[in-house]
Amino acid sequence: MDILCPSCSALHRLDERLTNSPKCQPLFGTYCLQEKKRLPLLDALPPAIQSLFDDDSAQACSFRKHIRQYNASNIFITHGVTIVNQVINGRGTLPFSINGELRHRSGALLPDQDKRACYAQLYIYDSSEALNERAE
Image 1 (cartoon, rainbow, N blue to C red):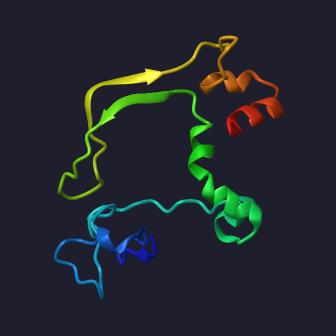
Image 2: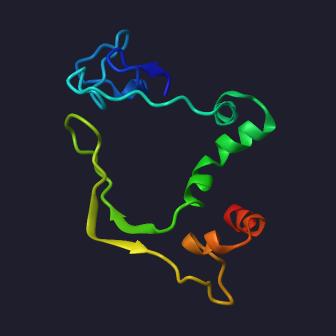
């Protein structure tokens, strides 16, 4: 994601450009629909967080490598779905399409003796112990 939308400054990949848009001056319609919708600007990240995205330190590189795991470790529930793997052509945000039923999975307040803690169970641990569990 290294190309700015000229309308809203959202970052895109070149292959996300509109079909009739030239590679040399790509136009995008995913978020603002070419200025038909106004998106509010996001607040700046705190400097400590921003540095994790910008720096080349070992800590920042590790953060970027494992960002999906960090995100997943901070959820209370997960969705159980069968994802439909087909691209639906159209304008606007790409849909998240599922087949069948949508299920929310959440664990009990305490894990079974032979199971690892997950979801909301991690929030009642001592914070250092919870951090270790989330990292696993």
